[in-house]
Length: 235
Image (cartoon, rainbow, N blue to C red):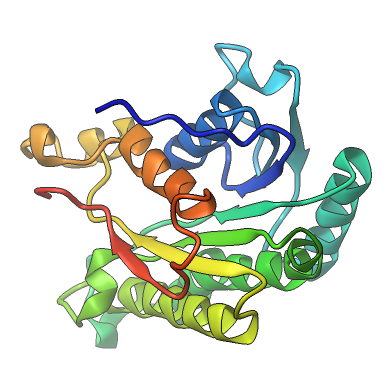
């Protein structure tokens, strides 16, 4: 069954848009008719010219810095006149050491990139979403559901994303919907390089996760808020 979405007339802010997942979500919103504000701390590798498309604007900003977040959100609201959807995609993984061997700098880095970016973007975008009765979708992780060896700090940061999602949903009940998606290993060039011997066929593609994000922002899920949705397929 083919699934199509109509986001014509809406504006979506996507953080982490220069990455594989953020880029796929930005493209999915654009293909569905939305205007897209694509934000990241680094400029995208725009080989196909997507970020020069009509209705797409790129905003360079450090979403771990509140002043930068306030600036970008203000520019987006001014440029497009509204904000309807926030996709908190900025994030990363670090692991390989037990807690007693993990550097404090690694802890700070993961909580900054995975949780603080989600907190700051949501903080500054929610007032705009209340005006449009919009939606927030953030990226947690399957591994955040339990402790595990070697990447406990990463898991904790992604558990925080899930809990803040539930809080945003509760605080904005009936006005702004907030949900999270929980991937496992995503089929990206970087992950293929890091895990060259893995079975890539079991990994979920960014475009597949993008469809779930759009569904959670669409009229197809009007009564879904505060959910943590698995998007890990067979991985």
